Length: 386
Image 1 (cartoon, rainbow, N blue to C red):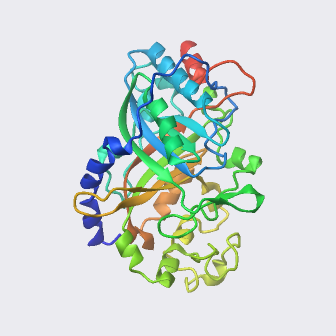
Image 2 (tube, one colour; image 1 turned 30 degrees about the vertical axis):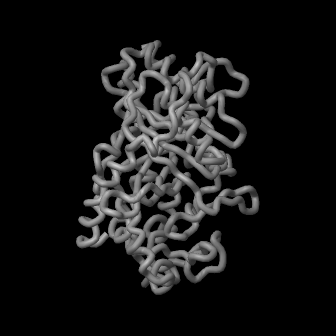
């Protein structure tokens, strides 16, 4: 983002926080606390839904501080969240991830922290608001309608032992399914969200790029989990809308009508960067060229995006609160999101976006089919053996 534009957007973050934190954006309260029904078990090698499962049209993401007094209380929090997850219907999901701060001295989990889990740093283009960053735990709910997503989020929020830090609703405009069952949508800039994304249906690819496997220096309990990176990004919609389509396409590096790389015919076509060394077709500072330069080395940096748009009421200054609830998953935060983010420094898109919040988290292992147990068992069992 240019120096002139970035202070202007940065000044909007405070007003944004004042409107987005209010009760009108947090969803209705759940009618009662979760019961003690067993939920999905944290079994190494198995996965929670909401990562590779098809994303429905609505979502809510909330971060919390865990206020439980001891490890027994933490177990109760996780088990009750698992019970809420067990109430989801087909096509819905409630996914729980934990932040680095959960592994401090409170619950004796320090030696079990996932190897690559740290607090998300501020990258050069960020203007981070502490009120919108980090957290001991995130709950991502996805459902077919905003009302149902709010209901699921309300159930999670009613679980005792959690203090809300920040929350944001998301939606996927023009949500649809293409051939092969692949879900796609457009973001508020009018471009296909996640074009060129990893194929979540490819289980071998997911095992290689997304899911944590046994070994590799990770604690044994983490197998079947994944690292979650969250970025809350405000869009400068008036500035973007004022640009002609050809200029927008040059910023992204893709056509707006069908998501094909510039100079290609289809979304799945591989751009010819070797034959376009000067960036005459796909500009050198375009988003897709910076994010994935298509070298043998950059293939290991690919991430699984599962993002949603957000749009809230205008703030006190009359500016639109709209942008991207960016969520991605990978086996290694440094190799994945962080490496890509550093490559994006200086990209043309910086002029139109303001990252103001988010964090790094680890998505807990999921349920083993037919197993008895509850969310977080693998972590807590490992802790009890120390």
